[in-house]
Image: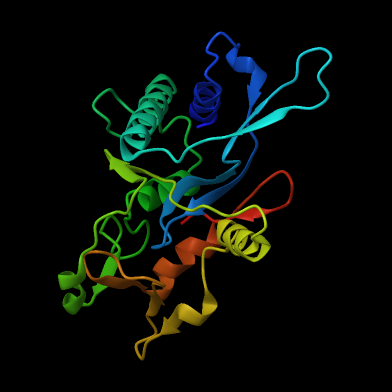
Length: 243
């Protein structure tokens, strides 16, 4: 992403002889480990400056900020393809995936139950209990199937990967900036949307329904414990959740 912004900054200047390393970007990134269905879905939320700084040469006082034009859908697609290619190449080299795209699990290097839970969660499967190996139960509202929406501008999907860049915050819109960062750093579960049914099963209501009409997910108490029981503590003392 930074490389694309730097190149667009140089193109706006019209001086392609200027070395690319004189253009620098700024960004804030939050790493989230969960999807809306509480599955293990590691992804990045990044807040970038909408442009690049041209670093000064000797004798100049300060860098010049070059505002970039919003990327087109074609540019977004090309960028996502590059990201996918690099991620796939890394996963194959690290032996997490074969060349066909299938996930690999090295039992000798696994961490027991935690690795089993992580692999199941990444595939939206139940890891323990009577329903072990089965899909998480989705709760659908069939009436919503009529309202399927197409992705908006600058929101692209390729091979199960997605890249969204259609949010623009003005320089003085501090309230909107705070709202966006709060979204970056939100916890995996909103307690007000977590419900217990009469038979003690757990229902998590989604904030927004999926395109196929899914409005939430349902767990037995044991399946729900998969979310909490095997928390892995990071070195800085912060707990990250793995289902």
